[in-house]
Image 1: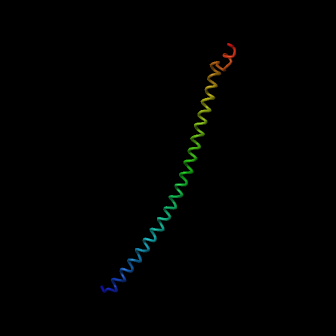
Image 2: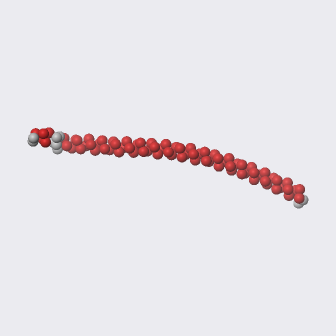
Length: 86
């Protein structure tokens, strides 16, 4: 193999490697963009979960309060006894 043939082969390999690196760089940029989109979507999901969690806690507290009022009514403790005794 002559020097010119070797140089030609090296040039071809260099061009192939350059294309491969450019392709990898492009794919990496796409993956970074996809990751950014996923991070934004996860942040949105986290905010929604926080709102649902807060609403669930509020609903639980409201239901507990209603249940306590019903139990008080059932037991005859509606606040009138303390007024009658005075």
